[in-house]
Length: 312
Image 1 (cartoon, rainbow, N blue to C red):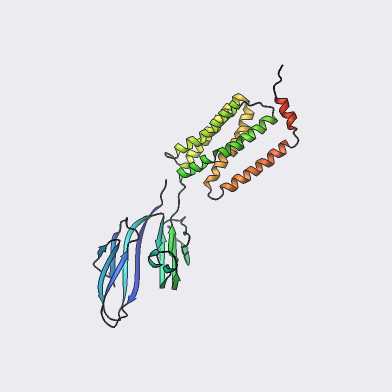
Image 2 (cartoon, rainbow, N blue to C red):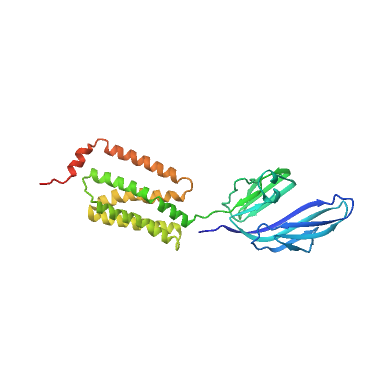
C-alpha cells in the first residue's frame, strides 16, 4: 500500500479589534488540526510579539490584555505533516449540518504546492484563482464577505495501489478465462482441432499463472514490471504448450493473440480508473461480432458430428 504523505508550513494572520470601551483580557485558542501529530515552531504572536502559550488537551492558548477600541493582528504559524488531505475549516469546528455555516470577512488564503496531480474533495470549495508555478501550483481563495458551510481542502496525489489493483485483476480472472476459452473453442472447431479437457486444464493453469505471479511480484518490484513479467510468463506457457499439442501457427497466432487480448489487455484496463467496465464491454461486443461473422454459415450439427470419433 502506498500512502500520500505531505509536509505543510502554515502561516495565518487575523485582524481583530476590541469593541469594548475598556481594556479587556483576550484569550486566543488554536485547536490543533489533529490530536496525534507533531507541530514544529508553533507560534502565536500579537502585532509581531510572541505570546506565551499554555496547552490544554488539543488546544494551544494565549492570553493578553487589549486596550479599548484598538485593532491588532494575530498571527499563528507552525510546521507539520499529514496524510491523504489537507483541510482549512471555515465552518464551526469543522462540523457538519446547518450549524456549521460560518462567516468570514476579507478572507484571503493562498496555498503554494511543490507538486501537481492533487484534487479537491467532495463538499470543498474550489479556488477562485489558479496559477501554475515552476514547482507546482499557487491556489487562492479570496472573498470579501463569505458565508459558507463548506471548507477548503486539498486531496493529495494518489499513487496506483499495487495490492488492491492485483486483487481486482485476480477477481476478474474467471471472466477473462471464459472469453479466452470461448475463442479457443471456436477457433479449434473451425480448424478441425480436437482439444481434450486435459488440454484446457493445462491452459487454465498457465492462464492463472499470470495472476499468481503478479500478486507476489508487486511486493518487490514496480506494478508495471510485475505486470509485464507475469504476462510474458503466462503467454510463454500457453504458446509453448499448444505448440506441442497442435502446431506453432495455432499456438502463436490464434492462442497467443487471444491471450494477449483477453488476459493482458483486459487486465491492463484496470490501470485506468473508471474505464475498466467500458473496455471489457467493448471487448466483449467486438468478440461477439467477430465470432458471429466467422461462424454464421456453419452448420453446427454437421461440424460437431464430423469431429466425433467413429466407433466400430
